[in-house]
Length: 380
Ligand code: IVH
Image (tube, rainbow, N blue to C red):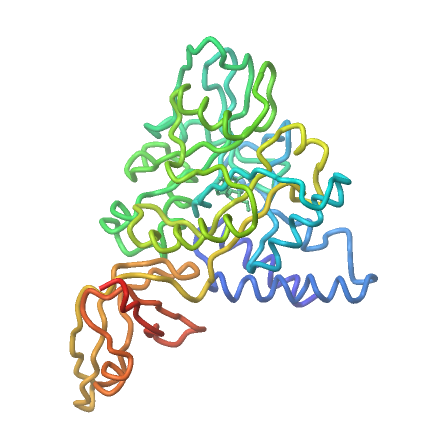
């Protein structure tokens, strides 16, 4: 009960107040502790099980509106084994052959705030936040200030009614110019989007990338990759790194490639989402609790990331001790934007052969100062 209470409090700070109390690693840890307790002791599973919780109840600042189709969450995968299991379960569920080839839409998971935009006869009529998944906040006026959101769509094949869903986010380059009010771009986007006054939302440049839909009437498309192409034609921004992939090995190859590019992207991503491409197959698979069975989020490590060493500076401590510090290209490690990593001392630099310009793996464990694990000598 104590742990659940803590989690609800963390959710409130993260989703409602846009000011997280702990980093993503700490959050995931407490959540998985509760989940494994529930799994082990069935009687602990209350109606309000954490596995059913999505986000936080809508803020009182906005009118509450029920989503016609709930906004679900995604289950996570962290390893090759998790992916193999994910695919195995799907093949079992579909009673397909063991070597059945499944195509996935692999989409970088932007770390922002999801929103659902309702269009009726091509007109943007209402925009909701996710809220608790069932009820969202009516943030239409705030969403209207976002340039990437088309206000009117005249394409012939645009459905009579559709909820276009995607992510609202702030670019890293814009985040840099903001005051130090927010820990990371996601919190800045969340804070900005949920301002009472749309004029305040407009002050912070927000972006929107579309990737799915909720309720629809008149959508005649049968797979995700075609849907993504149509979104582009209708005037929405879609992620240029989206790919159509089959086979766990290819998924992992793409994951590694994208992770290397991460520090150079102008938006934060915290993993790759894999969705079964075929809509008919998605429908057959359906959902479990609050997440679809046909999709999974392959998360990046929440305490390690890859970035570039821009410079090495010598810091002078209170006692006069000299400590070399690597200035790195800012990278979001589990919710904390890191731009410095300690190099400890000269021996450490020599031992690991760390040089300015190197591509390095940086670790940020708990609340200790981030440090460099290794550098990629092949990248020089
Ligand atoms: S699909 C039912 N696609 O991830 C499918 N979500 O934990 C759920 N997200 O709330 C959404 N990029 O904020 C989907 N390409 C993408 C995404 C994506 C980021 C976020 C979204 C959602 C969360 C799920």
